[in-house]
Image 1 (cartoon, rainbow, N blue to C red):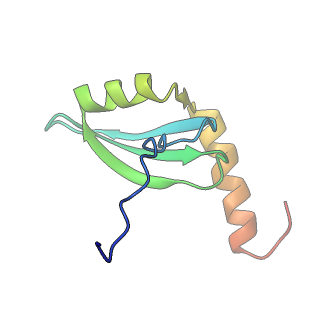
Image 2 (tube, rainbow, N blue to C red):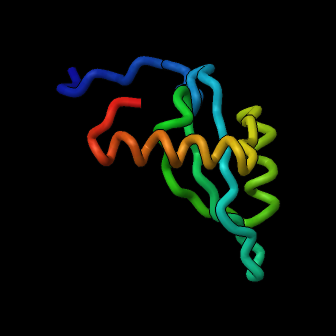
Length: 89
C-alpha cells in the first residue's frame, strides 16, 4: 500500500479564472520585446511583464485582454498616487 495518495485528476486552472484582464503597454523595445503591465480583475493591481511580440499578441488573444489607452493609464496613475500619499480617492 503506497503512503502517498494519488493526486486527484483536476483540470488545470485557467490563469485568469474568467476575470477581466487589462494590459497597459509600457514600451515596445527595439530588440523585439514588449514591456507591459497586466491586471486581472482590478486594473489598479498589476504586475510588470515582458514578452517577445508574437508571445504578447498570443497572450492577449488567449486571455481576451482589454488594452488601456494613455488617458486610462493616466487616471490609474493619479489614483495610485493618491493612495500612496494617504488620501482617499
